[in-house]
Image (cartoon, rainbow over all chains, first blue to last red; front, side, top):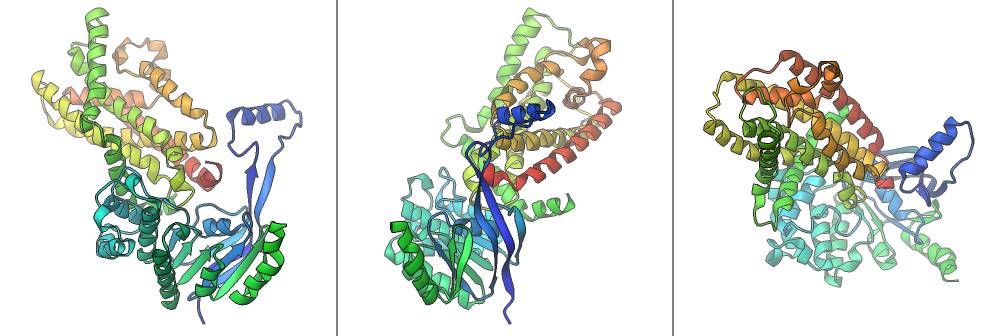
Length: 256
Length: 259
């Protein structure tokens, strides 16, 4: 029986949109003063529920694909797993080191060289310096940036950025690898390489959670797919079945 | 709190990496490089010497004014540099905070670490001054260890608190430089504590940076710090630190959503 590595129990997550997104001092002060004066003038806060009462569990060796339209809550799930943000309601249990490749250029500093960035990003992901020393060769090989190791990465192309970022994540030995729609910038060769790497991950009894609009890639590497719509799980199961459901019932709607 | 500190220890290599990054990025593509760490307190010392010693003739209990000013500008510059870089650290690293998990306090702490390096570099100039003015070098200098510790703890408290506040209210970004500009007049940098009227003395020393700076000065000038000063400064700094760290941690979970 494989162990559960990611467990969501009735998780809800909301964001403020509109006025309170950046809490302005004046707004806080005015709401405090109106409270003090005994007036009840509630400031309109628009809440957007990115996830509503979502429960699911992912086990070792599973490669979970998450699909859905834009704004359906896919990236929110990844951010919650990686503890970038926290739920308003519900409980999340994550067992194991998380390697999250969520956004292009995350954790990379433009003024530092490729070499310096590998060490910095490795440290951000919780690696020790000697661990990075051991993996350094592999990371550089995988990212194919040998020639550019010592120039500041602000001179890199976006493809090189993405290759560097993915390589550090993939080689920091996470037990749970999260990948968002960021591979799209790499060329076909590199995408194939990444997908193969992710597959080999799952084979070694690790967990992969993959968010993508590339249904072919999802079909190729995932053994389970979750379909999200407006922050709710509407389908969960075998890739072929869920993808067919998505294409038939959800993807069409956005085109209409 | 203990859990947080344990996690921070787990991420100590990240803290080192952030400090190295901060130092490298700060002086990269500048011509004078780390010499900027010295220019800041040195130029203030020269200006203060001209105005307050030559023009206004402030009485400094017999200490040559350049020595008097620089011995306070050293800890003061450490405090303000930490604050000016550290308070906006989280906001400047918003791309990291919304994309990767790590204990967020490593960012403000890294500004303090980098400022400490500047402090050490600027301290070399002080050693030159000490030799020039023939300040006796005694075992009393060992008092610097607890004094600098209190300075770092107090600075950490202020930086943690303001950096979290700036995430919540951006307006604080403009308040911090204004307050530090005014704050220097409320500390014994330009003038000695003895110039402060007796009736204000208690309120005056409630600001922990005051006993820290006056202890630092009397120690590096060959004397001994007042133990009462040192103990109260340390206790106040620790209390403030615990409060600021608690505040930071309680707000931390929302940083990625509101930054």
